[in-house]
Image (cartoon, rainbow over all chains, first blue to last red; front, side):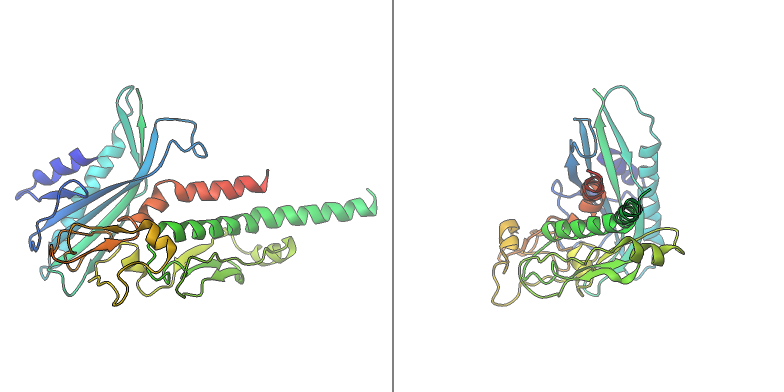
Length: 134
Length: 191
């Protein structure tokens, strides 16, 4: 999930930096646009829900930060980039090896801005199930 | 069928109808709230005691926390009989319980919006045992404003902390624990 998101935003002109929580840190006091991605882990190998021993579930939260005062269009444009990546992941056919990822319903986008922040924020989130095939 | 047999059958149908249609989902909602209280942040305890369940029947079956500080207190409402349930829902095509938090800072507590988080004066540590158990500190202060779960990365001469992981709410809802809570309660009905 990380790689496609990183590639998609790096391919934009100009490229938009992507920071993955607990891996890369956002530079302090930045005022330019960027994306933060948080991949969390929920239940893994939960016998109540599945007999598989190679299942992981969790949430994927993507936050888009764009410059405040320029309207929401740019933020929505970047949200669309993220959504397209997620839909592509979901359309990927299941193979016989590797890890198969299936995403749930995409919630959002929701938008917010605080008085103190130089950014306008957009957010989408979804659940995922990752299954080890071999 | 003997009179007593008919009466017992009606009572059993009454119990099954109420349980399946209403009391099962109600129990699932109550379990979900208990789990959300444990998963979520807890400093004074006001947020974890501000959950509420809204029943499709209005006041019947609804329950609400008191919003007061302290350890998480579960919320319950009395189970309803089949007659109470069936009479009211005949016109409805689905039964929906709504779980929400009425705390004024629920959006901040669930990492939906940013805010300027400042440790309460005179409270260097969480006031609840739950919060103390989950307490973690960041590397330095916060970047202000920030999401509740983003700690560290700010002034190295300051402190920052959290009592729940970033995006704990989204993880609970979408990471399988909500599904498990519902499944456990609904499976328990018929065991």
